[in-house]
Amino acid sequence: MFENLTDRLSRTLKNISGRGRLTEDNVKETLREVRMALLEADVALPVVRDFVNSVKERAVGQEVSKSLSPGQAFIKIVQSELENAMGAANEALDLSAQPPAVIMMAGLQGAGKTTSVAKLAKFLREREKKSVLVVSADVYRPAAIKQLETLATEVEVEFFPSDVSQKPIDIVNAAMAHAKLKFIDVVIVDTAGRLHVDESMMDEIKALHAAVNPVETLFVVDAMTGQDAATTAKAFNEALPLTGVILTKVDGDARGGAALSIRHITGKPIKFLGVGEKTDALEPFYPDRIASRILGMGDVLSLIEEVERGVDKDKAMKLAAKVKKGGNFDLEDFREQLQQMKNMGGMMNMIEKLPGVGQLPPEALAQVQDGKMTNQMEAIINSMTKGERARPDIIKGSRKRRIAQGSGTQIQDVNRLLKQFTQMQKMMKKMSAKGGMKKMMRGMSGMLPPGMKMPGR
Image: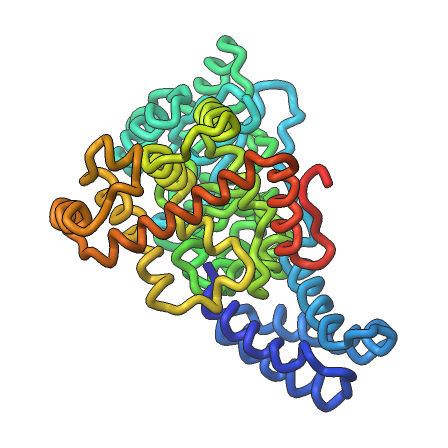
């Protein structure tokens, strides 16, 4: 996510971070590089101009000159201005209306609107504990209605049937009446998309909005369209009272222009990021965490939250009890950890939230990115006998050759897995020791960006 921008800004700011004092000349040179980095990331020109002016004003003023570490203070100003550009704080959905609260989704065709409806429905059901009904008012694409029905089944929310022969307003009114009868908390309405913004589309969606009076009107836009995403959002906002934006396909966006431009151009907050194709790949948008990731400082808070959500707590408790009683952490347990990591979006999803990920060798990152590493490790463990998984110390020469052959890997791959397993085993022993978890948490807190704290600390 935003790899090009992160790489360029990290290199630029590294040059100034060690400076004992900042002068107008070296600030000017760094800001020229920052400006180029933002323009290359397809950030809208007015946003770049205001951003650079704000940083310059603060950097050459009292704020930096009084600091003991001017270079670090400068980076802190850049981080703060990135947050301001994206909206300063997370803005959650306002669902305080009398049920059913209606959320209306708008956007161009191909932006990922229908998928975002399903993702949001799952998010509300699982994390907000809401009952959700989804309905499609897209009478121009029968496939869109069928797609939403399939997705609704997958995310376990109720689907209200509609047909291309009906009028969008009639569909939504019927869905509302049904939701009231069933005491459903939230109704999410999927509207028709177009290939471009046109008058007939705007008239239809305005009439639908007036009839439904939603508590949230979210504009779904593809992050990979860069600053065009902000321009399209602005056109929609002039026709509809948007309350926020869902930025999709962020996992494929190496630039970041849309994320940095939308708030400034539309005045509307980004509320969610679509970070993958799976129905759980929707993250609430936190400007401070994204700013931290853009500057290569990671996003440990989001990582911790994901781990808390994704880990099977019963299995984790059983494993903790086993290790605490002196039981061995074996390769069966290790395989289970790999599977849980997959459930959390894979190793890359976790690694990219760690500080300094940009400094890892590209070939190592590429291996993690396509899931090759995790799949290979699983294949190696699957090629072992039950006895070998329970007692890895017996895996020597001939056994290694057989395991490598059975898993389609090399002996060095088997050796690498056994080494990683041994490191994990040592870590588990430390955790089971008195105060072990606290020591680990203290270690992790040192990875946090300035001004951030561990939850509950």
